[in-house]
Length: 119
Image (cartoon, rainbow, N blue to C red; front, side):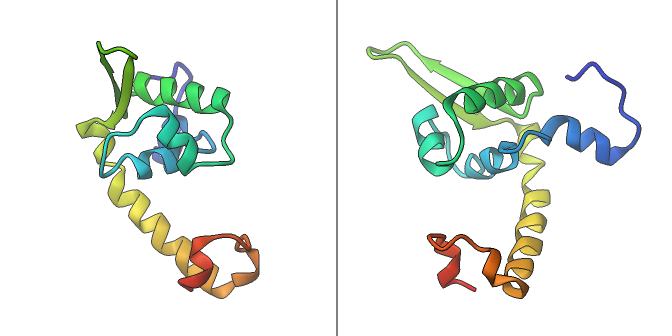
């Protein structure tokens, strides 16, 4: 857990999920375990350095667990913990709000986004 003081419930969320990509990482892990390369493919704008750092932080905060398999070549997968799964309803609400926002402001959506077809 973070070492600095929390002043309100929203700040406690920000302390854990404040990384730019953390909500997306949790969202993609909601249904299945993923490998590092899978997360890189799902979040193409993230750097490997930032992905590695934010995975470590999420693991330290008990949001995800890292499974290492003793195989050749070595395999590592990431999964949500039971505690991490409590974030899914929050992210579903954020997704709903974001979809409504995109419907009102479709010009902000990236031209190559799959969501362009949906709104």
